[in-house]
Image (cartoon, rainbow, N blue to C red; front, side):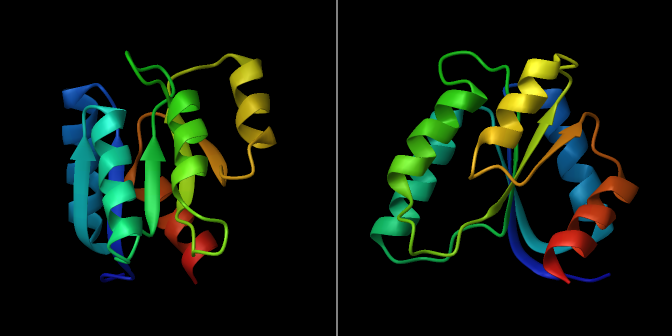
Length: 135
């Protein structure tokens, strides 16, 4: 599998998780570019700029839930206000260590969330996601 996607972004306050997941994505060669954000606000700024400048949005976003300042749920609230409905939306995968059933239910109830995946991301999980949503 080589570069099916243009861009994947990782949003997680854990630098270690971002580093590990970025290595998984890069080694799998599923996209041309992967960018990690330690702060959800930085990712929101990038998305807002992309919309404003009519640039292509990422194909895939991996989003952590439990983050300081702007958590995954608040990110989704703001994202839904930034990206107009008529644009092609990225596939958003919640990538979390949470085993709380209410987090799974809450994710399933969000129209902008495509799926919920437990950390850590593995090469097999990544390939399954790319095959399922981008084939």
